[in-house]
Image (cartoon, rainbow, N blue to C red):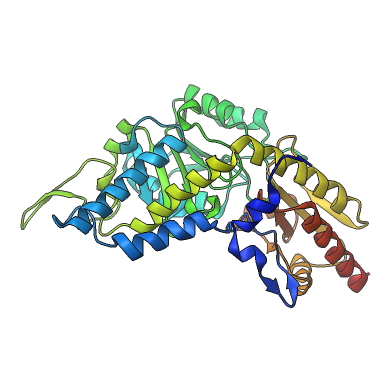
Amino acid sequence: MTSSFPIDRIRADFPILSRTIHGKPLVYLDNGATSQKPRAVIDAVSRFFSEENSNIHRGVHYLSMQATDAYDRARERIAEAIGVAAAREVVFVRGATEAVNLVAHGLAERFQPGDEILLTVMEHHANLVPWQILAQKRGVILRHAPLTPEGEIDMEAFAALCGPKTRLAAFTHVSNALGTVNPVVKMTRLAKQCGALVLIDGAQAVPHFPLRIAELGCDFYLFSGHKVFGPDGIGVLWGKWDELKSLPPYQSGGDMIERVHLTHSTFREPPERFEAGTPHISGAIGLAAAFDYLEGVGWEAMHAFEQELLAYATERVGNLGGIRIIGQAREKVGVLSFTLATAHPHDIGTILDTEGVAIRAGHHCAQPLMEFLGLPGTARASFAFYNTREEVDRLVQALEKVKRYFD
C-alpha cells in the first residue's frame, strides 16, 4: 500500500468509524450508498447553526447578510472544485435524483414523437425513470446501449444507436453497481456528432477522482453531496449557461421570482430560477467544506490509495471458492460486486452485518442492469479512502463464515 498515505490520521477525522456494531468494530463498506462525514464537515454545519443561522436573500440584518455571503461563497467554492468558471452555472438541488428530474421537466417540450433518447443498461433508476415518464408523455423512443462481458459500455453499439433522431444522451460517469468508469469524453463526442444534448450522472464519480467538467464537453452534469462526504439533502446540477437559461422553472415560489403580479410573474435567471423557497443553506456550506477537506487530503493520493485497496480486495475476495466477481472493467473505482453460488445477496449482507461489516445487497437501484446480467442482485462492497487492508481482511473472514454456513 502507499506507505506515505496518512490513513490513521484520516480515519481519526471520521468520528463514526470508531463505532462498534454488534460488539465488533465497524467496517463500513457501503460508501456507494452514502459516504461518512469528516469532522470538518460536521463542524462547518454545526458552526452555521450555532453562529450564522438565518434565511438568505431576504433580510437586511447582519445574520441574514452573513448567511447569504456564506451560501454564495459555497456556490463559488464548488464551482472552482468541479472545474467550471461560472458559479452561476451551479444550481443547488436536493440530490442527483432531483437534478435529473429538473432537466427532464425542463427539456420535455422540446421533444416530438419519434425523437430518441440514448441511455445505457447500467443506469441507476434515477437516470432511467424520469426519461421513461418523459417518453410516455411525448412519444419519445428510448434506446439503451448494452455492455460487454467485462461490464464496460459496448462502444460500437453505443455509436450505432446514436443517430439523427437522437436528441439527448444521458449516461452515468461511473456505474454504482459495477464500479465501471465510462469513457464519457468519447461518449459525449459521439452524441454531439449526432446533434444530441448530453447529461452525465456523476454521483458515483465525484467521490473518487478530481472533476473538470469543462473538459468533458457535456451540457449537464450532476451529483449528490452525501456521496462525496458532504451532507445529505444537497446536490449540484451544473449546466451550460445557455442551456440553463432556456429551461423553464422546475418549482415556483419565493426567491425564484423577478416580479410577481396578481395574474402573472416573471422569473429570475439561473441559478436562482431553480432554487425556489428557502434552500438547504447548511447543506451547501457543508458540501463546500467537504471539497475543502478532500483537496486537503489530495485527490491523486486518495485515488492511488483506493486503487491499491481495490486491487487487494479483488484478489482476496476472488480467491474465495464459489465467489463470482461481477464487473471486471479495465478502469474501475472502489466497487466490488460479487455473488456466491450458494447464498442470496441479502443473506450475505445480513450475516456480514453480524460481524460488523456493512455492505449493500440487492439490485442497487439498477434492476435493468441485473436483468441484463441475469442476476437477482449482487453483494456490493464499496470503498473510500478511509478504508484499510485490515477491513478487507475482515470482509474476507466474514465471507468465509457465510460460506461455512451455506456450504
